[in-house]
Amino acid sequence: MATLFQTLQLESPRLNPRPVAMRSTLISLSALLAFLALLAQAFFRAGIASWSVGLAYIAYDTVLLYFTASQLKWIVTPQVLMRGIMSPSVGVIIAAHNEERALPITIESLLGQQDRPELIVIADDGSTDGTAEMLARCYGLAPGKRLFAAGRPDFLWLRLPQGGKARALNTAIDSTPTDIILTVDADTLCEVHAVAAMRSAFAAELNLVAATGVLTPVCSRSLAGRFFQWFQRYEYIRNFVSRFAWMQLNSLLLISGAFAAFRREALIEVGGFDPNCLVEDYELIHRLHRHSVDHARNWTVRVVGGARARTDAPETLATFLRQRRRWFAGFLQTQRWNRDMTGNARFGWLGQAMMPVKVLDTLQPIYGLTAFGILIGAIGLGRLRVALPIILIMLSKVAIDLVFHLWILGVYRRWTGGDHPISYSKALLAALLEPFSFQLFRHAGAVWGWWTFLSGRQSWGRASREGIVSQK
Image (cartoon, rainbow, N blue to C red):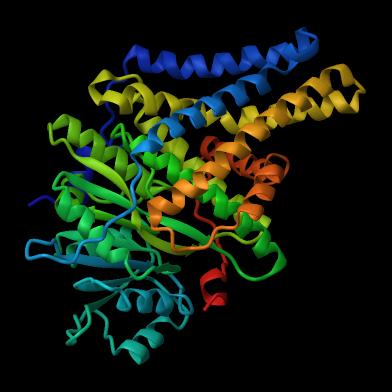
């Protein structure tokens, strides 16, 4: 029987590159040439035409908003079914490195589930803090020995040499013989119905091979923490609603490894997680879609509205930029390895719509920062006849975003169960301020990701976050 790595060598376009059609290359090249042509208008055109980069940026974002809105008619209130005779078994893998303080909170959230998993595997990725002592003291665990206890999930603690999250997960897969594998980060707190919602989703749809829950970011109670939690809270709402929209076309690519579920059989069939990718969860979904098309499996990937969790998020500008740098560099890695899918009719809407959109997304942060820079330049040079129309257009876009954002808050509440508070006044203020603050930080992190990708200096970096701990 082939090992996960042997299977990965066959399935991964990184290790086994696919031929790239001329159409795919032309789509990528056209996106770059369009940016250069629009940027040139700032030097050769007068009036609002000199801000063509900004006009294109606003038009693209508005089209995506319209697409998302058009798909939200399919959203319904989640229904979590009770476990039946044929319900799939669920095992949870928690990959942890030096998470002594947050890990027990995550474990307790799993023990408090309405529908508990059958097994919890702690993949201890070379921790050097007090994680080992805590697991032995609080849960009676010993490395490598499965602990059976009446009335709660079985436990297994794997002490591994530090090799990164993907390697820890791959090792744990062999020790998690359940139908469904749920990956939960060591700083993620699952809400009480989360496991039940995931189990119900996989029981109801046999072709479902991967699903993400809906995450809410949590930061510390410091001033900076409150600032970043405020903006990230509403950013996550928009992003998960957008994922629902793409799910309708079976083109969902982005799941959240902090809280995601996989059908174990499919996970093994595509070779598990790729340790050489900075965003191993995102890259894996491409492989699942690719394998499904290559072997006519009709697999699906979903976002499950009733499966909710809270997860630690960056709470300082430095940690936020490092996170977005890694995310975007990993996105660029994955986009490059899978460029043969772009414009490829074999992949349906995924190849002909989602992948071209992702090509444009590689340049979107550069468009955004360039447009903002041109506006600041016009103001600095006293070119008010140019700056004022730009500002009016930006305000019009802010108004559109406000209407959309306030509308989807209600849609989001209905989709995720509606029993968690959302402040409409705070959401309104965040939407007003975001284009001139948080959005620029997000784009800056992405541009840093471009540098990381092009330079090859790819690393996770360190992140010290206190959100989950501080909220308990």
